[in-house]
Amino acid sequence: MTASAPVLEVRGLAKHFGGLTAVGGVDFEVHEGEILGLIGPNGAGKSTIFNLIAGTHAASDGDVRFAGEPILGLPPHRIAARGILRTFQHNRPFGGMSLLDNVLVGAHVRFASSLWSIVAGRSRAEERERRERAEALIDFVGLGEARSADVTTLSFGQGRLLEIARALAGEPRLMLFDEPAAGLTPPELERLATLIRGIAARGIAVLLIEHDMHFLLPLAHRVVVLNFGMKIADGRPEAIRADPAVMDAYLGSYAAHR
Amino acid sequence: MSGFVKAGLAVLVLAGVPFFLGDYHNDVYRKLLLWVTLALGYNFLFGVCGQVAFSHFAFYGIGAYSIVILLFQLHLPLPLAALCGVGLCVLFALAVAIPSTRLEGFYLALATLALGQLFVVVLNEGGEVTGGTSGLANYRLPEVLGLSLRGPAYTGVIVLLLVFTFVVLARLDRSWFGRACRAVRDNPEAAAAMGIDVARTRVTAFTLTSALAGVAGMVYAFVDNTVNPPIFGIENAFLLLFMVIVGGAGRHAGAVIGAALLFLLPFWLAPLVGQHHVLVFGLLVVAAILFKPSGLVGIYDSVRARS
Image 1 (tube, each protein chain N blue to C red):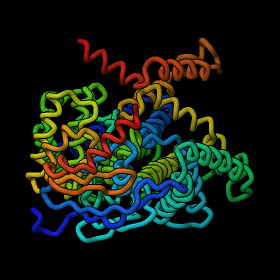
Image 2 (cartoon, each protein chain N blue to C red):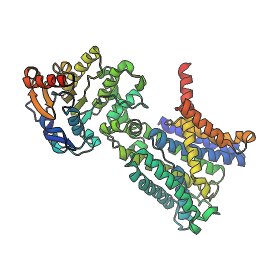
Image 3 (tube, one colour):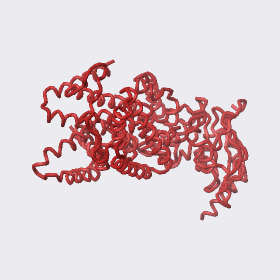
Image 4 (cartoon, chains in turn yellow, orange):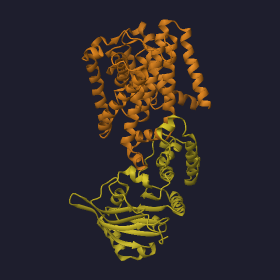
């Protein structure tokens, strides 16, 4: 999987909030079908990097290329249209819509019919086809039984699955997961790990921001460790587990939080 | 194809009604159809897309006044006048929507409130062009394809307008555009993360519904063969909002029920409360917001779900 050109290349990415450096020049890349974990203690800059890639924050410096094209500075909807779709840490369903419609919103960027053709009634075939795919995705993530449920009544774990189905509906080349393990029960975590492996097996590049090392290390193909906005390690999970700098960062922050 | 059959049947039934009504009831029926048409459009803007705007009647008025002025003062042929009227509505809608949707939702409400008030002032002060406070009158719809559309035949035109508006909005609602509008209403940030251009979606929905209101205004201009300022003021814009809230925002059926109820209610209430029916409307709106935000359609849904 490292033979192909990277789907996402991050070079010298930096973000300063006033005098504070949240991210101080970070490099990494993600390949097709690869699960890359981005970890670090609280305040290491994980979420900031996530928001810079997704376009919700403007970067201070650096370069981010997606499929070879620079994407830094594009608004979030344009980044999504290129093929980068995300999940939210705190589930954000569209409360006034059915579960199927929620998933179909995720497919927004894949619809080709114009407003004129909709008004003329010529968009039905496309609508039907997308609907079938969305139904299949609902089954793929394991929400089949909740199909007709009101999305505001889903459990937290089901809500997370909806986030994933919605993002998959857009047929992303890169999927960003913002702390997907947060708030899930052990059986739900198991299911999530299987699901993420299945997504990567479809050839989608996966970038996971995660706090929970126990969840991430067995799942990720490669791990980037951040501390104080700098990359302190980059390698296979086994190597990360044995890295003294990583242990220091985690234990150090653990001690500091006492 | 079955959609065409349904629409055709609806047109036949609705257009057949006036042949069984007297002059007075025919007039009430026409106004009811127009209110339902306006409520359907406003529901798409407010209920589906979540935008609070008070300009719907101003656009209705722009359509009504522009068709009369273009036909009888500039002597344009009817199709060209209609096209220019729609163009004017689109231009005004873009001029209001583009700056205000860049800001938060609150500003669209303010900008459209200002437009609504300003429009009536312009009508009142418009001299010979708008006819001032007494408006424009003494004109007749030119013959369309050699047909003179009067009386029940013109009611048929209003029915066509209603069905056309409904079909356009229903089709949009069931498409990626309708879902984008609802997504923008429910959670703009998540909508953007799914690739939806939030500002563009809002501007498109506003412009489209405003243009539909303009088309309805053009049809209205030949209902009484007179247009005058009070119709197009803020009071009616608020009444439209009430209709959609009471009926059930975000649902076509809600718009139809709300418009029918609040339009017809004053006729039944008149013997009881005289001219103070607005008081009853206020109570209905407060009750809807407090107890059943999904409106009368929501009540119907929960009754059906229980049985």
